[in-house]
Length: 279
Image (cartoon, rainbow, N blue to C red; front, side, top):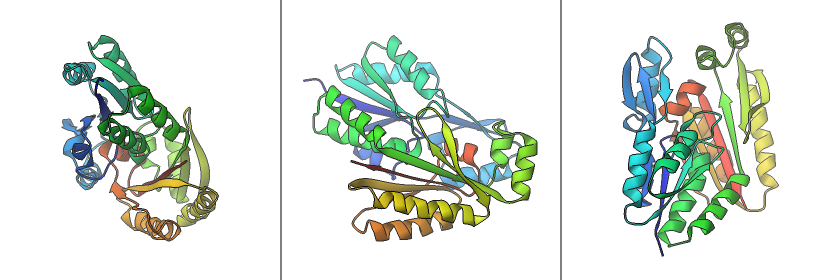
């Protein structure tokens, strides 16, 4: 029986040391700040937020080159192992498309999966796949489980400032000026084919209203397996959410992690993400 090895990208947000513990291979995206290119994996969330705040222009992110994927796949599969490579949604990055192209070139047996999520929403799939691989589960069994988690995951993103979306060309400058003038905050849901806006409102009330709806949503779920929170220099909001969610799930470890440079570039300062999956 051949061994299965798990690969993901650096947008997959996990608690420190967990990737190494579970033998998860992480291929890093890059970010360019004022002309200097950094590996995403070389920057902590806090370091990146400080660098972005003082940068002359919005940082630019880039996916790994196809050659890095091919080299990694060939290396991992040299002993006959099969590879499952799980990556962030193609709504944010072309990383998964590059991985698919590399899989066609590699000599190894590689299955590429578009998680349709990112951050800890992606990690739900990756962590379970790695745990199953460690228990010598068959490739098809792991893929089935990953797809099940994908279907049962919900990921919500709250954006406190639309400056980065304007700078990145995702919103017009006029729209950005108006929304910032009126302190408009936005909550979006990441779906397979699009990101939809759920709430727009002034100040923290928009986030509070959405969060009450989230708690009501979670209360209807019979078997919530994991809840996770990520923030981009928005720890106070993240901890408030955790406190209330911990009351709902007292026996669950709810990680609160800093956003990677890849995610924080898009969302900007003060953003958060709350995600969960159930069975």
